[in-house]
Length: 94
Image (cartoon, rainbow, N blue to C red; front, side, top):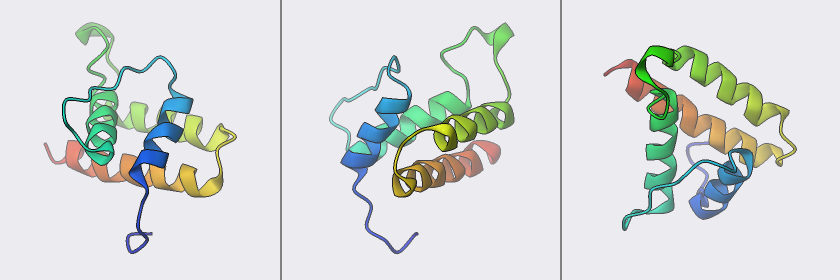
């Protein structure tokens, strides 16, 4: 998958279809940067009150379940999951 060119505009739209109420921050960023920042924010549960936050591992599991339970085409599911995995590695090493 790492060698395949990824259409991040398409993947970002697919991500938005899963999280319809999710606000995406778009200040002169590429689709890839927006997607990665949004996923990182999700894993860190930054949109939740600090006392109610879940761990990155819980958020990763819930996102994975939502992705694979969706009706998205498998290639979009895999690309979104791959970005989640990469961002989880980054969050884990913080």
